[in-house]
Image (cartoon, rainbow, N blue to C red; front, side, top):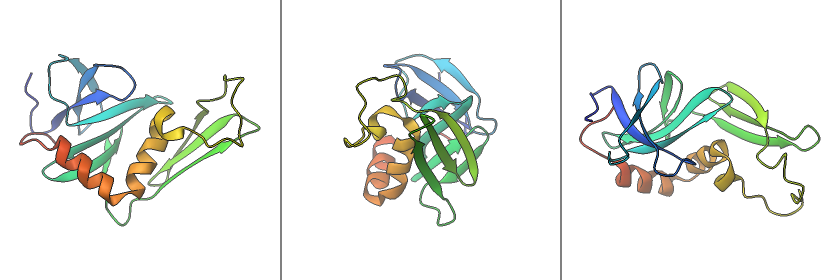
Amino acid sequence: MNPTPMQVIIGDMFGVGRRVQLDCLTGAVTPVSVDSKASGNFHIEAGHVYALYAQGGVLYVQCDALRWPVGAPELTMGYGHDLEQQTTSFVLAGHRIVYPAWWANDPAFEPLIPERDEGEDYCAYLVSVWRQPGLQRSLCDAWSTPSGC
């Protein structure tokens, strides 16, 4: 399947081998062949489709139908946990969601031990990429394709 100029193929960050086609205008995802080359990744959290992908030499972050260049100076992100409520708060460009923390059902979780947020929670991964311009460039180079959004 070849994406149109307003679509991009991305892989599920936590679904081994799962690929979808993201409609960049609506944020809707449609399953595609695992053989399709991915230009980024995605995850669905609290009912929202979050995606990180490259197009035309630019790395984008998208939530549903809204998208921003990751390096845009006006883009802000925030991430944190409420240990008592066992929830995580994620803010992307002023849009905030609260959802159960990845460790909420882990009886072995110790809050004083360094967390594994980036590997367990897609929103933490997005914040990590946003904070690291070198990583942004590497991902954009690895994912860049002649087609996409």
